Image 1 (spheres, helix red, strand yellow):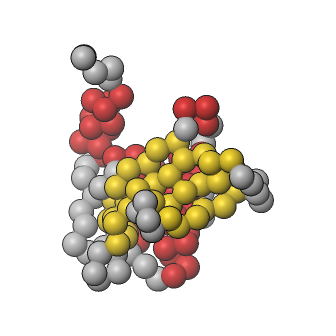
Image 2: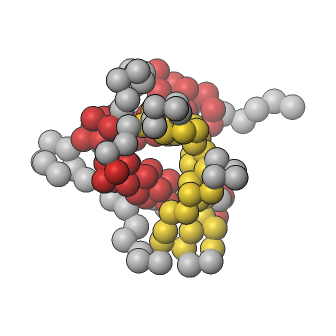
Amino acid sequence: MTDQHPAPRIHEDPSLRVVRNDDRERFELWRDEQFIGFEAFEEHEDGTVELRTTIVGEQFGRQGYARTLVTMLLEDARAQGRRVCATCPYVQEYLHRFPQYQDLLAPSCELPPAPAVREKRRRWSLPRAH
């Protein structure tokens, strides 16, 4: 990557793998036999993969696993010549931080402005009243 757009820091652990689980419509991140998290997706008729939500187990939070999962998914999409649509706020924010992946966005998929994405993520992280 260029100095202007540094590569995302990810876990380089060779035991990490992404498994496509079509029954649950998600890409799962595993380390050996340990489930770490997933990215929910929907595959559209035109082949675009909509990335809907990123979930990482609480014990793996704030350790870069979500970033690793999204990076692995986007690198795979690039290798396969596929387009993505980011409706997940985490993936949207990722694409703002690492714009070198924005070329993977499907033409019909707009990336919301960074301030709107940050605000949405901030609202979602607030404790909810019962």
